[in-house]
Image (cartoon, rainbow, N blue to C red; front, side):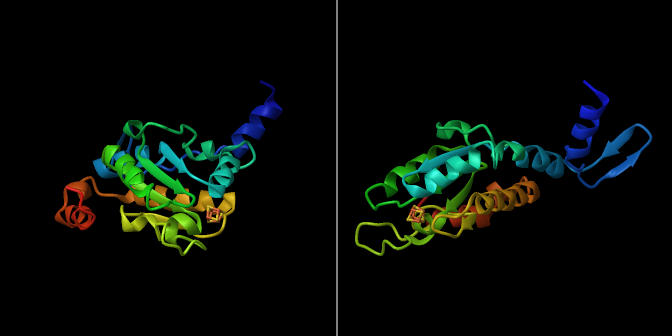
Length: 189
Ligand code: SF4
């Protein structure tokens, strides 16, 4: 590799910052929470549950121009068993709601949920008898991305917000009484 190319690569690649800790000659000590959070937040595997136009916007977010892979999320999973972020994009009819819930239930903990666009967040313009008025009626949502459709920059912002949550989450949260209570409010044990 030429020196010029090497310089360009070195100047444009950002190395993820190390978590807070104590360092000295030949050692670095930090908490387990922070190390696990660092690894998790930079390797989120999203499951795209796309039913309509917002899904097309998500395809643009994955493509070369916006390139979600820059955030470690290029590996989409169409199997709930190998996904940790459920991204719901598009109108969810009441008939489809049990399917969304089933997919959520099939995901292993820890799992996060992002509602992309007005339809997934609140039913959007479809205030009708057949449309679910937001997926938080059936499953807990961590981040909402507004818009109809949201631009790829907004989707990326949503992913960054998820990364913040993932990076700071305590390892005990999923077994806490508060979290169990939250799931119980959705009828999930
Ligand atoms: S929020 Fe708008 S763009 Fe997204 S699925 Fe609904 S109608 Fe389509």
